[in-house]
Image (cartoon, rainbow, N blue to C red; front, side):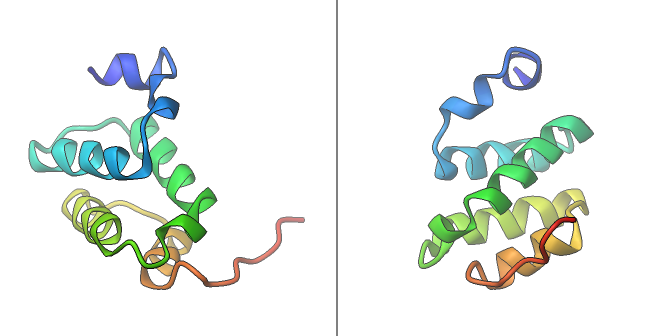
Length: 90
């Protein structure tokens, strides 16, 4: 399943809620490559404004990344406050 999501690029066809459920399911069984987790993280950061007010997605993301013990400081800031201002990349 993971190969389909990552290698064949099918992850982009899922909604944010579905991605959060996928993250949680992989975390529950202790699976998920670094590449998959990184793609999910980038997607949640990119679409952070859509997370605002969506408590279910935020809960699933926090739970999934917490179980995997993964996620950058930027992701943690986004999950704490989706309206946070991120530093500009040079």
